[in-house]
Image (tube, rainbow, N blue to C red):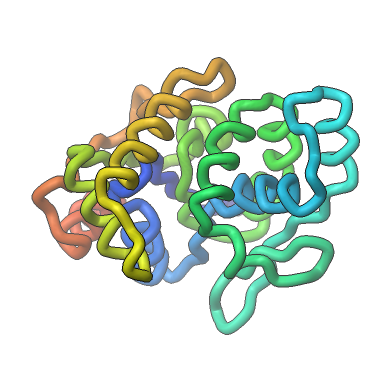
Length: 219
């Protein structure tokens, strides 16, 4: 039986995670944050002080990597060697390294099998940056969610905790990540040719989800 696979790609701060979670709930399937996998790689690189620019060292490291998603309380939890690392992968340091290291073909190849395995066994909404272009080019429903940089930076700023946050720094880091993701040679961030493009700058989460639901159910 063919699985129902929906892909949502786009830059940071466009609302992909919230939309994907809500859409998965509406469709009664699982939500997969593929960006968490790349953050997991970055987290482990930092934990083990891996020279990820060294191709040999990176391949050895990836061959020993044991990242996986497990279902817990109806949520997918990212584990590394069986330990939950979901709460440790959202720091600015991990975020920036995830953006840089994800440009490595070896990293993307190592994580591809995990994503494919999930799709073979579940109806799912996959959120990421190359889901519709590289990982699931034949997915029946593809969306590309984007928004104005200033709006995306403000959204990310509002999500952050603490009193040391700086919206200008958030915007600079987001712009840098946009450039990294769109300019990399391996699987650059771009909409699939057949993806439905949605500008979320002036839309609520519910409005975006409603648009997607209508498109999916009309097929």
